[in-house]
Structure formats: C-alpha cells, structure tokens
Length: 329
Image (cartoon, rainbow, N blue to C red):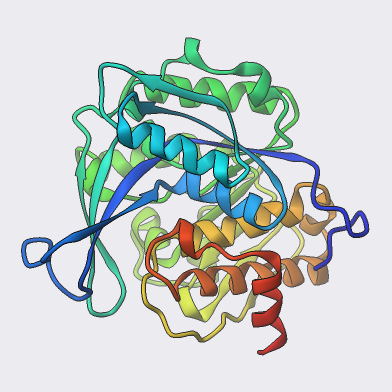
C-alpha cells in the first residue's frame, strides 16, 4: 500500500505508551536460562518496539514512559532518538532501575521470560508526570496491559487513555500478555479486560485469544465473543499462518509469509506498527475490506521479516524491505 497522500510519509502522530526495557537473550538458541553460556543485551518492550516499527516505516511516533536514571535507561532513550521516535514524554526515575528481562529462545524460536522489576522505573510513572499536550496531539494512542499491573502506573495509563480519547485519538490496544509479571492468571484476565471496551482497534495473538476466552478454539465464534460496540477492528494473529480480521461489516483472513524463523520477539509489534502506520492518515482502511486486506498483507510481511533476525528492534523492517517480501511471494 502506498501512502494515501502521494509519496509523502504518514504525518499523523502515533503515541505509544508503556514500558521499555532491556532484553537479555542467550548467545546460544535452544537452551534454558541456566544453561546459557552468555547473554546479548537487546532493547525491548512492546510499546517502544511499536513506536520504532512506525518510524522505521516512515511514520511519526512518540513514546511515553519512564526509564531508570541509569546507563541502561539513557541507552534506551538514545535508541528511541536514533530511530526518530520523539522522547518528549520519556521520564527518568532516580530511585528505580530500568526493567530487565531474560528471554530464552527455545529450539522452536518461541520465548520464555524471567523479569527483574521490583519495582522498575516504568512501574512508577504517575498521572501528574504525563505530558498531556503530547498525548492530546496523537492521532492514534497505542498501549498494552503491562502498565496496568501496579500503581501508580495503572492510574497514569488510565489518565493517558482518557486524555487521548477526549482529544479524538483512535485507541489501539495490544494486551501483550506476560503471565509471569501478574500476581495470578485471574488478575491478568480481569485487568486486561477492564479497559477492553474502550479500545477501537485490538490485536490479540492466538494464545491470548485462548487465555482471554477460556476456549481452546481459535475460530470466529471465540474471537467475536471479545467484540464490543466501540470496536472498529479486531485482529487475531496466527504466527506464520497470518491473521484474521473482524469489523462491524466484514470479516476474513490474510495469509502469512513463510520465512526461516530465528526469533519471534517483536513480530507482533512489527505487525501493529505497520498497521497503525498505514491507518493513521486513512481511517477508511477500517471500512474498505480490499484496502484493509492490503494493509494486513503488508503488516504480515513486516511481522515475518522481524522473525528472521535475533532481537526485536534490529529486526524491524523498512518499507523497502517489506516491499521485497511482498513482491517475492
């Protein structure tokens, strides 16, 4: 899909809210954390990945969140800036560290997590610290659910959503379930669903669909049980099988791309960034099925490319890289 305004990149601002952290990834794939001989540090955190995915594709993005006033926090802010993401909404906490996650890549490319956040800086963002002018300037406001786990960040998250919505932003939600971070599975389900009916675009993975519905079926009936009246687009991602889409008027699926998967980290964030980038200046994507399918094909290509390299941010594609995959199908 070419941008709707000729050859110009998208101009609407996408503001991404939540956590940014350091992923430590074993130097050897297919081993447990205990067996790993060493680790590579990689910047991560789903909302930050989405912001960088957007700018990599030529869009405009800002990140709102809190980092530790430490070497890692400064490094992460630098990575956002290097990638063209606005950092006006980034704060530094002097009393807490930047969050760390140790992520094992199993032999099948899937991940297991162990987190160090007790508490980490991202959990300590308060409503009073939010850059409300930045949030009000968003055409799309994107967020996850990790920021709902504890106060004061939960209140900051709810305030940011309320301000963005009042200013006319489209609300985009990717729950990005990380069960080890929640006190219990029941609490995770309850809190993830507590803000469900406010989002207008929601993306869940097949695993998250099973978790939220309590059903082991990945079908239309299961997906539509999550539908709510404010929703404009519900997406269920199916890994290499592509995705399913649901709107008020139509539903369907778009096939994925078969690639040599090395690491699935960031694939969903790449998919979301691509979708939002193509939608921010053209809301008709939500009503025009042919247009939506074209955008989702592009998003699937971006997600697939991201699985071919280790780490999320280094693997996020440019528009031209995505075009090559689309042409070669």
